[in-house]
Length: 483
Ligand code: AMP
Ligand code: MG
Image 1: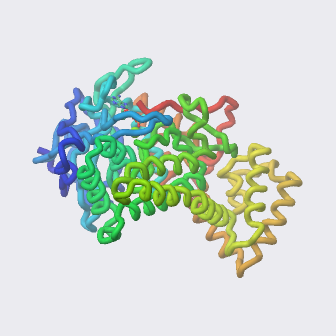
Image 2 (image 1 turned 120 degrees about the horizontal axis):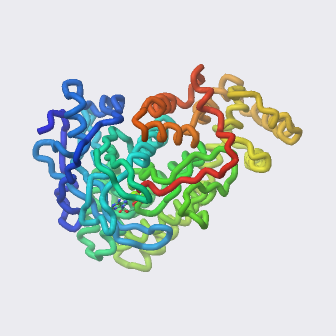
Image 3 (image 1 turned 135 degrees about the vertical axis):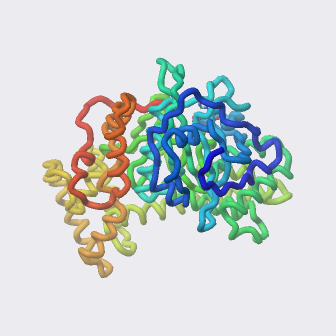
């Protein structure tokens, strides 16, 4: 029995049979803990101080389960690149919901834990590289103050898994405020049992949105709240140049946390069409398409809720459509405000949009680094770049300075606003690759250093220079799905 002070409940386990499969993680041969997130453990009020690495390895591989554990694989569906599929946790198991001292509830899930009823043709396993990648990027997102699932540990399984070549197997412990996805609603809605849909709705509201518990149209209110959460999330992604890469509806949470770090990556030089994922040939999930896809996914969510919005189907569809169509306006407003923050602008001025778009156009034309351009504007540039001596840029800067002087602004005020919104470091692609390559050879120092730097990406520090410069490689960076 594991001696971790989990404070487990299994509320999802208690939902109807159709929502999940009751299953334990499949034990692994030779578990070896390679990364452990002490900061997160303490945020969760978990105490591992009396437990040695040998036992921790057993715990975070699922070989040693907590007493009375009721682990499950969750059922869900999803539109993958636009096509509807019945899915589910094909390689993950939820071992329980841990409640912290401040009464916050988190799913504790093992990813890469073996086959389940939802594995289809997969082996239920995960490779070390992609699990470490998820660890790095999800923790980076948390440092960037963007809602995300977290990563508590990575264990090597001591087993080889077969992909294009034989790879080291690994299990990631993922922590999430829940794993309920748009795809979870799609799965239940596809079964066409209204009572089950109502159960999922009630569960979701209880868990994430208790403020609408007593409202007279909970389904509609939930739709509204999700439109709000997801538009905030995608605006945050746009702010830091994050490209998720696989925004299928099964990878969109109802909590509004970023989930499923597969082929994601951060943009270096500004190009709205940037795509990193090797499988996204059409650019469906390109940087500039992320808000469009967010709306598309929200429309799929709205479809699930139709029977609960109004008994009169036509009326329900009309109401839901109106809500979905409000997305663009909401998004645009949030995006404008986000860009104003990045530029240190207070208040709203008529010409703000031109000012913002003209900068982006210049960045695109000159292939300027997205992150470092804002560093330059804050006078925190990692190194002098002659790119900014350009006349067009100087003229733009003059307009920006004029705009800055409006609405009681002052250098102190605008710099503070800018510093809170413009990261100095992001997980640069070559730095992530370097960390993963070393880790593959059992050297975890570069990875730990990278994760440490990314914890506090908004502060100027002496040791960040090496992490700020984009790769000078001319080769196009490509990512692969996290399998
Ligand atoms: P993802 O692309 O990670 O969002 O996964 C999409 C679906 O494929 C989910 O249902 C996963 O559980 C499933 N899946 C991915 N990799 C595997 C695997 N190695 N074995 C079984 N199922 C998998
Ligand atoms: Mg997924």
